[in-house]
Length: 322
Image (cartoon, rainbow, N blue to C red; front, side, top):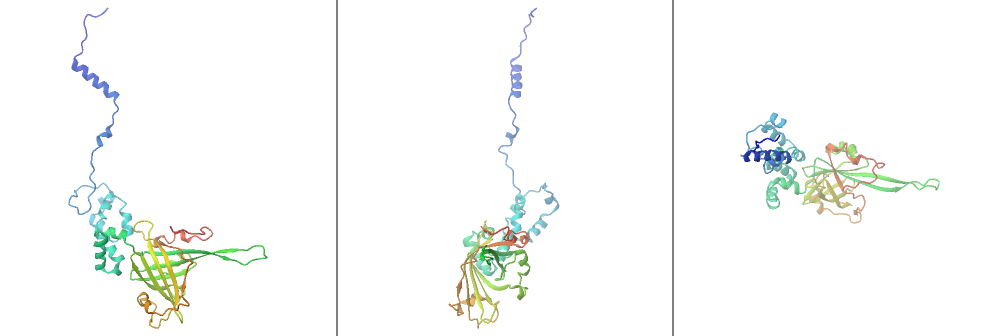
């Protein structure tokens, strides 16, 4: 039996029921609410816009900013570059020019403070950090190593075989901030030679001391082989880097040895480059070397034990510095 009473739904209630049904059909995307929301970066220490809030990082809650700055001041520039990759706060803090000014003045102390400030303003837009990354410099925190190899014919046995030997030797250069450098040629690997590459080395170590100058990216170095008639060793190098600011490669542009008359020089440690123009070189004994000119690769002191340059010729017959 059909009911005579008709059930009528109000218009307002019908609209509400339709909207409730649509909610089950439309996909919810709550992440759309995050679009357009700007996150304020962490301001560097000492900034006027820095807010007093609790940093979620444990090291920032435990270590005061003053003590953190003191730690940064005691780090070398290469460790500062690694520390800048830790977090955003450290990166902004380490952009402070105070850190890079002291590093630049120490790296180019031979140029003088006044000359460094002139170069800073004329070439690097008064940015110490930019000057550290772009200006060529010799590194004093390790050794420059040149690995050279050549083939030498062996002794023929029973006319059956003709053996050859692969000979490997190294050139080592350590630059000092004072303008001096140490040089050694040896067949031993870098981890065995690094112990004697210092100013206290004995004559048995065959470590020679000389002077060097840096002009733009060119390095000129010279020293004397001792003897009744000393031999002058001169080299011209060009600095470069595999990345900006690395300065971890040196190409040998020229290497010359010659007999000289050094009556005016009393000590081998004297400023050789400054007085070499006054010496009378023996043109007959002058030799311009064309072999053994492999580029120098830089090895920091902390990587001496693990460097690939320690591998013997059986495992690495040829080395490409890059």
